[in-house]
Image (cartoon, rainbow, N blue to C red; front, side):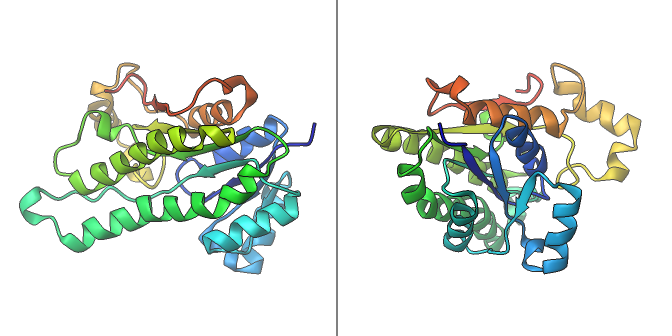
Length: 243
């Protein structure tokens, strides 16, 4: 059987690198996109750090899919790791431009990525899968973060709808929905250094700790693998029991 091949977006953010490493450990050839990779020196530095992964120069969704498919000899897995900061604002102070920006980064970009990848996934020599990295926040809601939560909820809705639509093509679609996972995007180092703040944050987490990116990466690799061949349309929380 041909080697499965994956594209991971925004690899230097959120859980992108953990996902890429976990996929590679499972024998998947992995191409990685990141905004910084438009610079040749940044691509070279990444390749030196992660010799088992490929850094793509392309940034546009169609171009990155084409480059990944060309360099890997096809594409059977897409991991949409859309990272975006959760901006805090009560409803009365919420700016419409922030709502639009959240939807553009988390929803529109996800749609563009999957649309671009569909021809390659339909033609894949190995079972095809899409995994979006979303959030567990919509499963409970977060006061004062409504635009972010709504955009993440829309991503979860895309996954459930796409799973029904693409099943006839043999393409599985799932989401990994993290929360309370160590990431500079959501938990800056100075915050993590404050033991009292971390204890307060994790008080509502069943496991009473923050998660590790590698734990999310393992879930992504599982959903992309043949071991999850009867799982589609699922939003898997990876949030230590929260909510």
